[in-house]
Image (cartoon, rainbow, N blue to C red; front, side, top):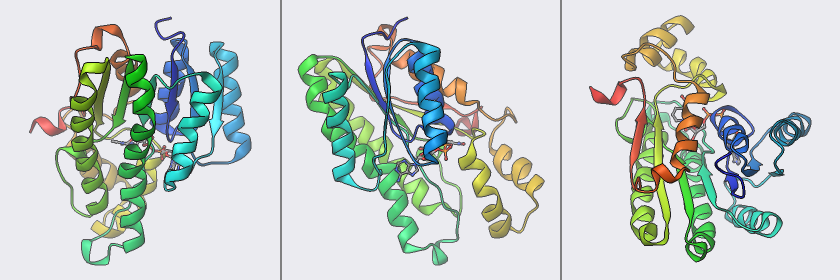
Length: 261
Ligand code: NAD
């Protein structure tokens, strides 16, 4: 197992892509801190399953990615309980779909907070330890929307373009310390986040559910297939390997060709 002795924090890992990252890193032997919202009993089930299936330590931290003090506390707790944070995966994300003139101001603030600012806070807190130990892997889940826009997603597209910029700055600052920082930019991955935006997209564009799936979501993706959470997680595991030590500041697409066009 390539990542035994490494400790990872994955934000937004009670569901979807984040849970797949946590499980894939644990499968490689890393201890993992999972984080995110959800029913306590469901989260405990996932946490315990990671420990028993992969024989690692898995902790849950309930830090709200909208609260800087809780985010900093999560990194400090992970360092105190596990000894270090070697792998940081910024993944928590939310979406809201609305024409710009109706876009609720509080939704803008929340999306910028969870999808962008939380990564600033985690990296800010974890960088010192990574630099001191001369090893670290920072992985940011960006999106095809870090490269291109779609209508009605003002806050999300702004946040994802923002994290692509943050990623480059962090990569430059930490390059000489054995710490890499990269974005993974999936196209549409079938997760609760995608499923939840279907009703609003139906309303915003006056379409049926089937039309949203085939004419809006998969329309963008030349392969006409959703990306799987396991594929995204496998790329993260690769980015944590020694083979990937010279990949930094990159924004790697996994979008079925979406942004090639
Ligand atoms: P998801 O809804 O399944 O998971 C989102 C996670 O973030 C959950 O664990 C949730 O609890 C957590 N979260 C939300 N608000 C939080 C908060 N305030 N504090 C702590 N945790 C919070 O969604 P997903 O599709 O797995 O998305 C994960 C990431 O991947 C997001 O950054 C998203 O933008 C990105 N992404 C998703 C897709 C896709 O098609 N699903 C495509 C590109 C990028």
